[in-house]
Image (cartoon, rainbow, N blue to C red; front, side, top):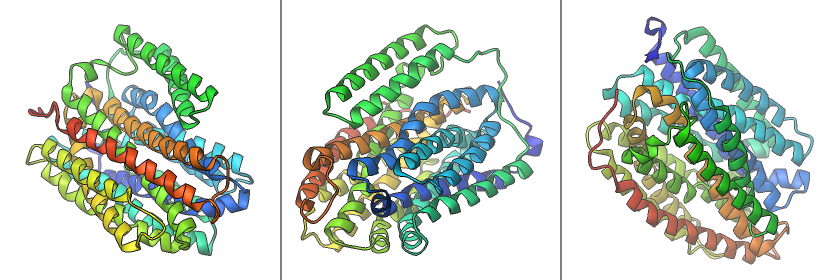
Length: 464
């Protein structure tokens, strides 16, 4: 049974804290994409190394989200969220003073670990504190906060990168995160955890973490021979992990949620596909706009704001709607609209107008916003309260893994066409060809995702 001292819960402050966290973390992450060319020039990094500034963060998140989600259910969700906030601020501060590209990538990895502590618990805390009838609304607020952060990131990131340099992105984020931690300490006294005799699954954890590492590292470096070996080892390891979880008395991840709960399984798979097909769009277009169209970081950021702005605007309303109508319709429609936006990007070239890119991003953003809040509501509403932490962590893992998968697809395509060359005017056509391949793959993924966002959700029973 879940325990919490609700006499000391200020729901307004709690919601403000989670919204702030969900706002500033993606803001900084997206702003870093705008700063990549400047970082690359300072540290003399080629395109593949630049991608690891983003992927190191995602890799660490993918590895640690599930273990932290399980730990939070047992140890305390608020406690995990608080410590994650504190350590994230420290890691972000250190990133701001990185003296080399290698150390910045290492710093981003530790950022990913600490962000997993927050993202594995933030949605679980909100769901635990608010009644089921308000679930879609508060999910919509938090999802929208993420997209507002993404909306502001390109302009703010471009402005700060041009005026104060890329390091300011990390330092400002560190200060805001420290303030959030202080607010948690002062105003959030309640705790949510499971009162049970369940033990932590160390064996499952020791299988899961290296398997995820091998899989992500391997896929990101395909088609190298070593990468193929790592990918195969990762897949084998995850198969062994699933088998061990089915036999474990206290599993790290209750696999019955996937095999016996169609809504939980298909909604998580839908999230994986959606993020896989959309996350690297910002990374690819940021490079395209600055290298091919010769826009400044601030100009590129102003253009890229279109997608997350629409995502934020639509997510609020789709979250509220998912409290009143079956969210599978909203999620499926959102996935279909996203597919149209991605297909439009497959036609980019040196002559593509900025208006065309803005229109494509607007369609993509509208579709993503329509999909995300209802899909999150379906995941969290399909499980009992004792699984809120692991459900939140699983969904976040799907997102982090799919983001890594998305970046891996983009990096693989760039590597095939450019090798280890630094992007410049002499090879820009090769980069554009690689971008087209990326968007074609994303279009196929979106098309497949339409089916999975709809299947298995005819009857959604809300668990309280």
